[in-house]
Length: 80
Image 1: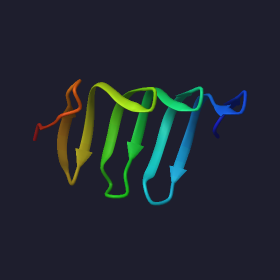
Image 2: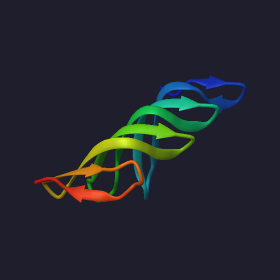
Image 3: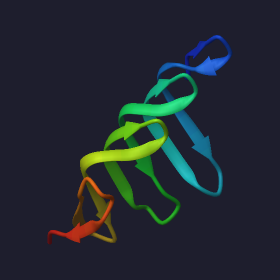
């Protein structure tokens, strides 16, 4: 269950957006911030860090049975 502080999502929780997918992880002041997992409508799964609602740092994703790695600049590299 999503937690709130001053009317904004804050703490651990889950956000489901019908057409876009779902995020489960940390929120700070209404934004994805910290460790989280995003599952998109195309079943791409991203696991990693977020900072102020944006993917941040080196993370891992799985897309169509393929492992990928996201570099700090957001570029996706196929791993296998």
